[in-house]
Length: 442
Image (tube, rainbow, N blue to C red; front, top):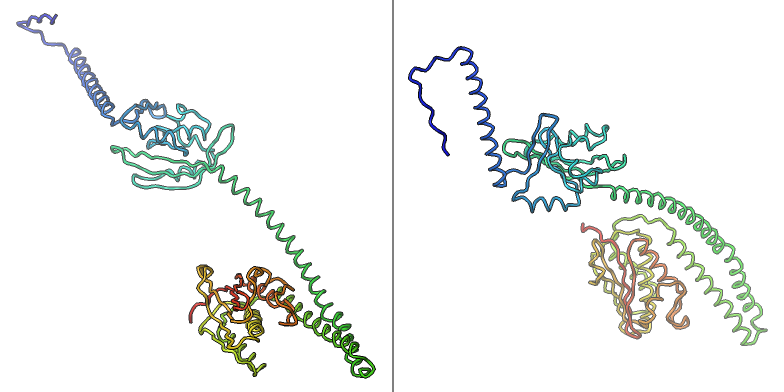
């Protein structure tokens, strides 16, 4: 029922002075209550419309955070599922919201995070640096590595990314913290492996130096100790033929000739072994080298040495590489002399030096060169043996040699960071390829 009307007094009495002051205080209190109701109604309406994520209630230092379900639920689900820790903090550094990953990193529950000062998650020694990273304004951001207080008194290294936002006039900062524990562990393992590798390299270097010293001793022995009896063998065989040849029958003279031929072959083999030893140990002084000019000079030497031969040289101009000049000249000499030797029985012999368009040219900064001839060739089934010491695919009586030259070529090219290979067919010639670092055009 509606309330009954109150009768109106005909001569109302004037209130006393004390009563007037009390009535004024009640009016002010009523106005404050009405303002609070108005603010509450606005807050409720904001919650209904999804415009509020959380409420901060309480006196400064005693804030309580209440999160509300809103239209931002998909966003909250994404943040909750992140592998990184995430939090939103108030202007005073109070955590308004934190995801489960951040709770796990710091050994807390989600409810414990809300309302906690963000600096409480950091060891005291690291708080000044952490606070400086957080000091960003709206629209600004910062990144840096920090240490969090982890479960059980541990520390958790993390990469912090913080961004500032203006939310209806209030500065809110959003934090993303990536756990670097696994990365630090991997870095420590890499450092340990590197230290072990350095020890191994030092041991291998010492071993290599020892092997090189042994090789130098062997080289000296070959160069001096073995040559002396070899010269004696060859000299006495020659003296035998000269002084007592008339007393030897044809078979005896044949034996003496075989001894001298074998001695000469042994001397050539020693020379080639010494060359192989030197190219394996020689220093590589890299410089621009004009391979075309070097090849032309070697071709002139070959023609001068055997003027009766008719061989057409085709040498491409302008092939320039970065290499050790003396070593790369050895490569060209071996390959061109090989081509000269294996075209000896070929009418219309042609020897070509040029660049080649092969898969090797796709390597950055490399140039592929080749020496091609139309001579005796070889069985491609045995191509892999060509660059091994003492491997020969032709009879020594037909094509003399020691089988060391191509091994030297391979060693030198390897020392320059390149590679070698060959293609050919019996009676159809051969092509020898090698790659080197290309020189910049002048």
